[in-house]
Length: 422
Image (cartoon, rainbow, N blue to C red; front, side, top):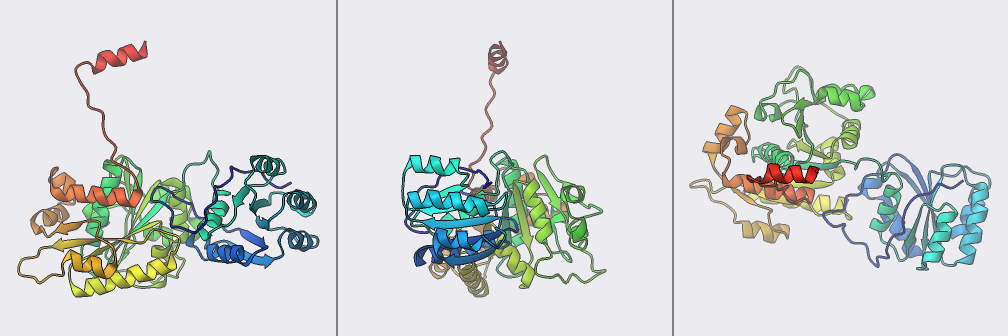
């Protein structure tokens, strides 16, 4: 039998970047075969296969539509997902009946059609079709349809990964990432974890005043042991909503990693935490590039000088090209206004990058230095400091959430609660 799934999609004439609030969870390692009738649909499916969220899926595209699919599976096992393009109504239904006779149990079918009819959709659902997408389709429509097949409605939402990286060393990217994670946990009331990926020199443990005996190195060097329970033991609790996966920050070993060294850690964190903030070190390697491209949202931290401008533009251009169906990376300026230092204005940055910085954080060595030396966040040092509002702005832009407002209590609150109870 072909498995049952969910509701139909609205037609979208062109592929467009998803809105901030939309979060499409990546698909697991599955096989997908598409049988297209038009070159336009084949091109959209091909583009979808290059999207980061289908990075683990094995995608194969053939022309010929329904007849080609039926013929192909007479003598071959069916994949996890079959994508079928069809123009007609009667041909589609009779074709699905024939396909069901050669389809393996558990195979999911996505149909791309041009008939917008609720009766047809109900008939497709009755026959076990997983999703019906109206043509013409864009790459993001195909990505959404395939990925959503593996996100059960009753399951917990898959966590959002936010990567923070400096355009240059020493620009304060770690400080920004730790304070933004604090704002996500405290002001947006989201459970979050900070993963310090700078294993040799990471400062997250110092900034949060934590010295856990275990951390991310234990997971990276023992990938076969990584599961939810193992990762949970490695986490250090910073607040009710914030946890830390700390770096060892020792030099007793060399931290050379393969491109996919952190995949198991990230996948496990996604399944347990709504928000994961990656503190990515300023280096360019296979695994740092993979971490950035695979993140749901990216923040680049830059200082207002020429080298930072060049590096930010290079990063933005590369990540835009590698993530065509995602929102472009965000960037912020940090350490703005150093006395007697010539600086590039934010307007010049915006002109070169073709987007405005999220915020421009002023250079204030006194409070930032005190926070770093005391193992505290800026909000703990000075509750009303202006940078706290900037960290919250960044947190809201990256997560697509508004601040969680606490209800004000009054003298009548106990009485009102009693009346509600009655």
